[in-house]
Image (cartoon, rainbow, N blue to C red; front, side):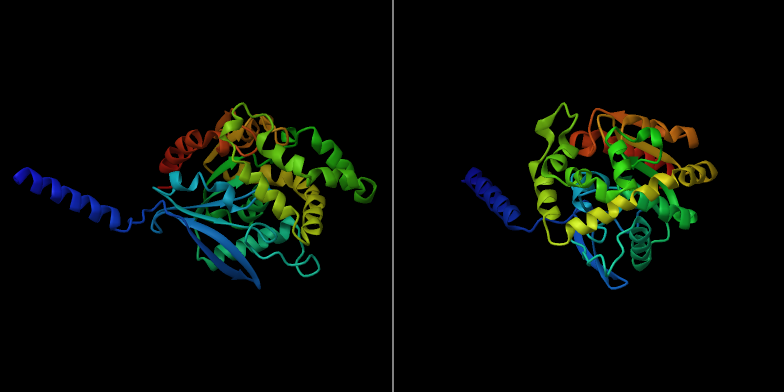
Length: 311
């Protein structure tokens, strides 16, 4: 009878445990909006709010969703904020006649977003389009930047892959090279940004590029993305200024770069050492979105790096 009582009690405890709600941890992500100059900006947040902040800036044609697998691993020790730029993800996408889609303006809105959240000290995680946005924010507020993490966010001409030769022709005369933009936003190119060069295709979630293809098909997206692709020429022109800033301020810098990326090739990751000799550089067996293939490795580099420099 005593044994039966113990078993019954254990079953009751197990049932109670199953019925009890799960307690949220710091790794739980929450989703928010804030208005910046009349534009509603969506952002993801996770981690303890009293911990140092890491702001993650996404690339084309994605959104803060691209960091979804990385968030739970980093949020155990750090406060994470990841916004969607205007025209991307869940943020507003005003028509181009109501919002100028330039990298200067995206950076201005991002700076206003950080101000709206009261963030005065933060590390930056830059990827792809997040690079030119982040560099503009850093140049404006160098005193706020505690550290820099870079994944395939280019700041050096040697980091530009072969396709940028054709894009350079598009910059000279967009009307003469419409095929460059059509290729740039095509479903095939959208998928290949994820899968090109991978040796582990089974690690890639097709929903990632499926969602991006659907997003690019929304009304107004062609005009938005054409404006940004054309304006990207201002980023290449700004590379010397960004490099000078790195030499002058030498922020703690970690580079975790997908070396198989055909767009921003591995030489672009290595080049950060030129201006920040102390930079920690890791070229990973991965593509343009390296955490899709190497999320554990990247978290394994980012956490101790932040522990050393910002905690």
